[in-house]
Image: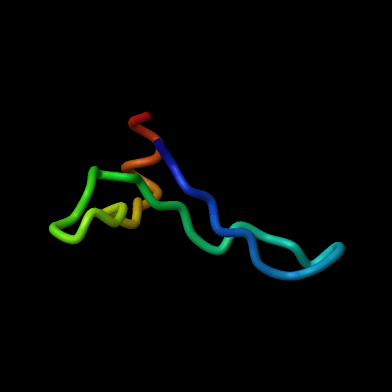
Length: 43
């Protein structure tokens, strides 16, 4: 699963970051890891 963070408003909207959900952490919250461009190209 991926999370896409979108920033800005109107025509200045852009993708700020993309992260992968890697599971759950010790407290039961989602654990996420940022993805690099090279990692995205492998998906």
